[in-house]
Structures are given as structure tokens and as C-alpha cells.
Image 1 (cartoon, helix red, strand yellow):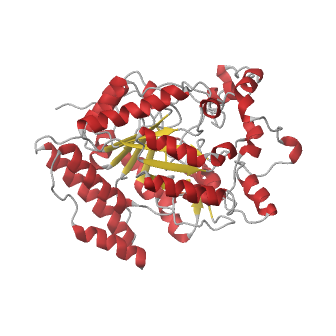
Image 2: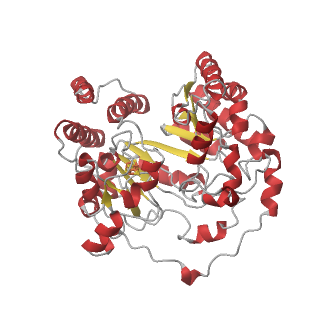
Image 3: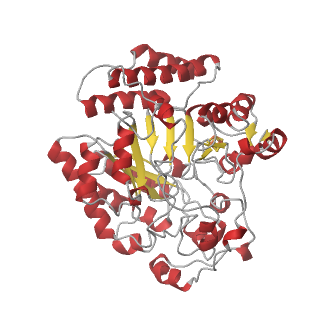
Length: 476
Ligand code: SF4
């Protein structure tokens, strides 16, 4: 069997060959947790299929229809789709060892002209594939494909319990279409008796959404959704008119709504997680303002630099009145060499290994388990890290060069000492965006469940002691 990514030894039965590799990868991460020896490969890979979008959601840092600088933002990098044929030097090796491929980035993946072929190719590596989508392409063909291929998870960006609320935020979206698309996906799963893809909703803590969260849960229950997340609204400097719409978690108001929504979700058999939103908890009026100002990416701004509030119901019309500035001429795009394209001294200056002024709440495991590959091949350590600093490029550098180079290597060595690559992690640390745990053992369990379901067998892939050892590391 040929694959466009290369790298497989097909002399052995494919599944055994791949499963050996996956078991080795999990063992290597476990050894890292126990002894600090750094694994040779990541377990999770992000592949940015597309960095273009067919919508202009108001809160989006790149495509927002209310950002007058959007043409300039868009021109900062080359836009388009991940090219499968431009020979990724080591992608096959990575995919063999990965358990998860997040097939998305800062764009809409389903509009990739070869979306289905791309997914089929990835699937040959027996990886759990998930992706985030705006849900506008959940048509019959795509839904059938996603179910037949046992794609692991489809995460749909969706907030708002009515067409008016949804379409004034997700500009270019169609409420009826998204609701019908989710129901279609659920229906095909039921007809075929399949558990995958998991249907997950990513909703955002807009004030109006939090006010109707229980209705939203009800609606999602009627669509067959499996998981709902509620995340805080992050506001960018180009769309400050959204800041007053950012709900914060006041225990007696939003906290109470979350309690009721969570209860209703439980009755409907939906997993409900609002933990990221609950991190914005504020008990006093002053706390509310402080928490809200933290939603502003890049830190607080003086009041006169924040645009006045625009009513959500008028947001679509407002976007039409916000004429975008013309893009910068092509020649003005700044060159952005990766850390492997500059000399050692320059790389060290840019990565900025430093002790943060505020100690991060959680230990970060991302540079030991994740590789985020952007549409043009540039690599960064995770989805939270800065988009201006790349550790290498898969079209020019080998896996080893990137994984042990001045980006990953420096981060991997310095993090246990409490020093971080501030050049790429500054915002994440400031806004406490990092995951609270590595969850690699949970990923392994989930992989086993998915593999059994997708390939219809009952065999255990990972030895039970592995999970006990992971737990022991946590307890120590
Ligand atoms: S500190 Fe944040 S940005 Fe940096 S690697 Fe960890 S999760 Fe990613």
C-alpha cells in the first residue's frame, strides 16, 4: 500500500507494525514522566490543512468581519492549503508513532480541495483524527465519509441558542444548516451503529450565550451532540468592541447557570465541560473588571483605546460598516526565518529562555508530546504558542533537527528548571492557557477504545501496568 507521506515498513502486517510503534511512543513518554529522559517523537501532531476560511466570525483573530485590519492580518502569511505532494521529509515517521492527528489549524479544514483524500491518507496510519470546523460542510457526502472512516472526533464551533444570536457572531454561518448538519451526522452514526466520530461543540463565553446556556444544551441534546465545552472569550486588540461581551464567572450568576446546564447535559447524556470558562471566576465587582481585562490578549488597555460596545443583534450590520483597510503591498511582508534558519546566537535571542514573572499554574508537557505543523510547513510546539516564532520547517529540516534544535531542545531542557521559551510562550503563560495535565494515559485509553471500535476487535493494545505507572508518577 502506498501513502503520500511515506515511512511505513509494510513487510510486517500493517496493524502490528503500527501498533508496535504506538506502544513504543507511549512507553517513551511514560519513561520521560518517570526519569526525565526526553522521548524521540511526539504523540500528537497538528496538521494545518488550511489557513483560509469561508466565514468571518467576529471573535476570530484572523478573519473577523469587524477587524478593519483583516486584509493586513491575512497578508502576514501566505494563505492556502497544505500541499500533500510537496514531500514531507519525515511526516510518515511521525504519523506512524502518533496516536492523534489534529487535522486543522487557523483556518477551515473542510474547504481543503482534497479534504476527503487527505483524511483517507492520514487514516492509513491508524491515528485518531479530529478536527475543528465551522460546521458548514456537514453535508451527506462528508457525514457518510466521517462515519465510514471512523474519524475520531468532529469539534464544531457553535454558540447561540437562536439564529439571530448565532448568525450575528458567526458571520457567514447559517443556523439551520449547522443544526441540520449535526443532526445528519448523528443520524448516520445511529443508522450504521457507530460510536465515532464523537460530536463535540466548542462554545464561547459570550454574555448572551451564557444567559441562554441551558436552552443551548437542550438544543444540542436534540441534535445528538456528545460533548459540550464552554470556553472563555478571548478578545484581540483589533476587535475591542467585543470586550464588554466577555462573560466572567460570577459564582451566583454564571456559576449557577453552569450548574443548571451541567445538570441538564447529564440528563441528556452529554459530557459538559466548562472548566476553562470557570477559570475566569470573579467574586467581587473589582474582580469582574480584572477578570474581564484579562480576556484582552496582550494585556489591559486604557479605556479610550477600547471601542464602544455594539449590540450582538446588530453585529452583522455593524460588520458591513467596518470597511477593511487595504492590504500591505506584497513586498512588505516581513521575512520570518525559523530558529533553524538563523545562527545560534540569534536563535537564543528569539526563543528567550527565561523565568516568567508569574509562575505558571500547571507544568507544561507540550514540547515533549506535541508538534504543530502549519500549512507552510513551519513548526511550533502547540496550539497556544505564538504564531511568529517557529522552531523549524518540515519542508527544509528533519524531524531530529527540529525536535532537538534551538526551539524544542531548549524548551525541553529548560522547562523542568522553571524557565520557559518566552519568545513563543509569553501569551500562554500570561493568560494561563496551558492544559492542566499531559493526559497521555487518557489518550492511550481512548486510542485503544477507538481502535477496537474502528477495526472491530477486542484486543488490549496497551498493558494495564502502563496506566498504573502513569498514575504513580502523578501521585509522587
Ligand atoms: S507554555 Fe503554553 S505555549 Fe508554551 S509550550 Fe506550553 S502550552 Fe504551549
